[in-house]
Length: 94
Image (cartoon, rainbow, N blue to C red; front, side, top):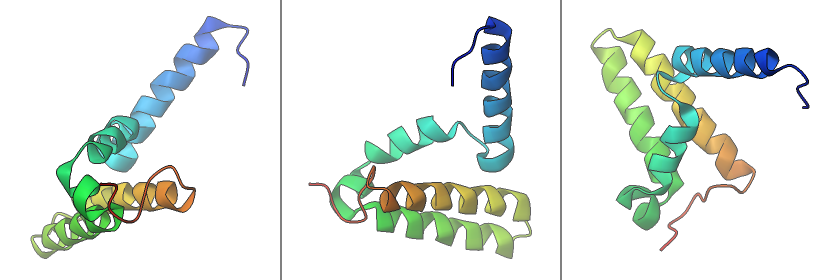
């Protein structure tokens, strides 16, 4: 996408940041990078990170926090999509 007006780009960045907060509760790209640098991802793989996020979401639902659970599940899905396209690994990387 080519922007001829700097305001268009600025609006897109603002939308993206707002969208990330609504969907994930964080900046999803920053989250993905932190996952890639984590011990769990390196030694157990992305599938274990996703399982942990899903487990956390279950615990949140058990305590009535469905909004946070929704965001955790969205984070898990974002990681799975990256694993499916090959930009992250299901298995250990070390």
